[in-house]
Length: 79
Length: 468
Image 1 (cartoon, rainbow over the protein chains, first blue to last red):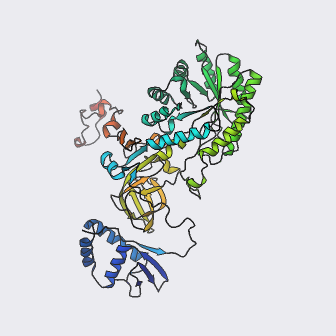
Image 2: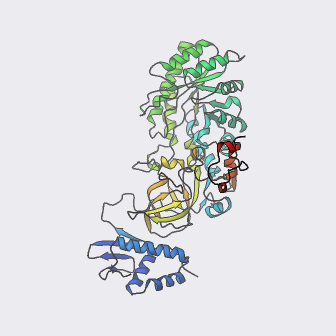
Image 3: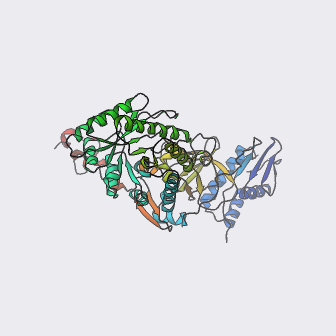
């Protein structure tokens, strides 16, 4: 799973797609995940890191991860 | 220590017109009701849970009484049982001085069991059996007549009684409210009401003591109350001058709105619903100018229901699940549905999370737990990011929900009253399967001991083997 290369993201959660002109806002966790994806970290790595860092059950994270992927796909932000 | 988790969210920014109400309107957390933590209440009494604030009930009553009594010398409230007839709620209002206004035989009996004396019960509504009429006559309650069939039946009952039953005539009239409520009572403009009054007075068997009018429900204008008060006062004058029958009280009914937001309304109810002082001003001003001497002003009776109880009620519940719909919208499934929160058919109820949250919000549909497509609590509401297990508070649910709720697919939840110190008292237990089945009966041929009725016996038993 990779973000499109031209997608601009900021540390404050602003996302811009120059191909479509669409802009987005992300909450803290989505911002963190996008930054990790941009560093080419694998989904499994990212999930492990989040489970260690946040107070969340694995099932909940798995469900929310799938939902985030669906959001990214809907917004045409994934390769 | 691990950090607090909030599920990841991406929101597209759209350059549409600005929302003049701002981006966040319903997102203050409500961690407690009158100091009682939501988490503790749900933990002790289960989820979902109705909670009523005794403090707010009393405050509402006192405020409404004050609004009228500071403008008119003779005022009496009668608690509208159908709005919420949980005994604890009724008793709070009776303690405050309210009479009872009932619209069925069982409500009448409830009022008696709540200690209301017969003469302080107003028996209203279009359906009163002969036995109920006889009981109300025996206990000297006031019967509000709804139609001629009832009038003739009561005349028949009264023929055998030593004392004339006290009655009032329910009048429907044109006060500029559309659609006009003309299904209850006798119409004023076509002469029906005057005809009924003439028959009552002429019979000599009934004592006409009051005139009653209930214009509608959730009326957002004060003007119709002024029109109705004037027309009732004129009718009372006619009774006195033409029939030599002074009217002891005028009952302007209820219909006063709470501050809930009606579905389809552009502005929230808090901005559009007139306060009770505005209604009181119009009604009292009209009656004061109607020509009665100060010492002969009729008693003003009011049957406010929703106004007194709605904002004292809360429904606490829990998020069961969240999901995405086919078009990408968020959907949140709660553990209470339209069968419990009946008023979600009428209102866009305000719903708050009980716990803390970040500044991020999203639009979501709120569904109940019923396996029915109609079970939609809010079609679209902007809320923080809710997850399974989060607790929510629905506001202003005290009116009609705890009487119109249905056992349907799920059982009805417990109800708790928070006393004036914020201490919880359970006033109705959550329903159980045993409770639900108490009234069911099983034909012998379907009982578990009947031959061939075991699911493992295979197939439908023949008539021959099951008949006694």
